[in-house]
Figure 1 (cartoon, rainbow, N blue to C red):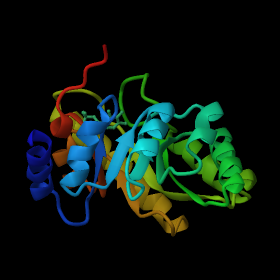
Figure 2: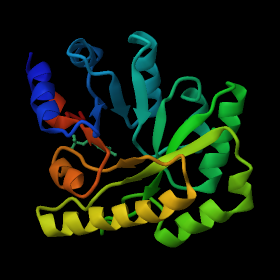
Figure 3: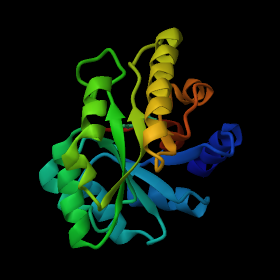
Figure 4: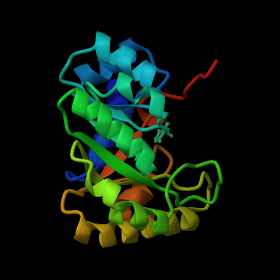
Amino acid sequence: MLIKQNLQNIKKTLPKEVTLVAVSKTKPISDIEEAYNAGQRIFGENKIQEMSQKWNSLPKDIEWHMIGHVQRNKVKYMAEFVSLIHGVDSLKLLTEINKQAVKHDRIISCLLQIHIAKEETKFGLNEEELKELLNSEDFKKLKNIQIKGLMGMATFTKNENQIKKEFKYLKSIYNTINKSLPTASILSMGMSGDYQIAIQEGSTMVRIGSSIFGARNYN
Ligand SMILES: *Cc1c(COP(=O)(O)O)cnc(C)c1O
């Protein structure tokens, strides 16, 4: 019941054009079923094997988003079903996704992850690397992937001005690549703690976990 209520409360605050990804990582099937029964169809996971097990045992009209860092040797386990891969940050990874997509006769949608936070540990491309990737001949040869937009994570901080500045920066990069990438329509930014700021700054997709399912227990 709590999950349903949390979902409804969050949805009420989201503008219509903002898509909600319910981040169900570490959470049991029963929690996802509860959200599903409340109408939610898009779920985000950060471990490929966990996502694949959940895909196997849940209704097939769920859209599965891979939001975590992707290891190249595991792309094959999700190529058949994944709807959107948020954390793509290298041409090598894109090339592998393309290769696995060909095997399944699919075109896999991807977001390029941009490093906007101060923390060193957050993955992603910088602006220069992004331009290099998009302009490379090898990238243009990949026919079974489609770049749908950008994703970023702000610094984990209480300083709202810092968060705002980082989302603004991501939005400005998004605006520039948008001109050369007509398939890009998604700007994935915002989590439980900062999604309201993200929406103010132009997010079109928020990834919310703990505010829906409660705090995660990693033990
Ligand atoms: C876990 C995670 C989220 C959701 O985080 P919450 O703070 O629980 O909303 C969003 N994005 C990514 C990339 C994550 O790994």
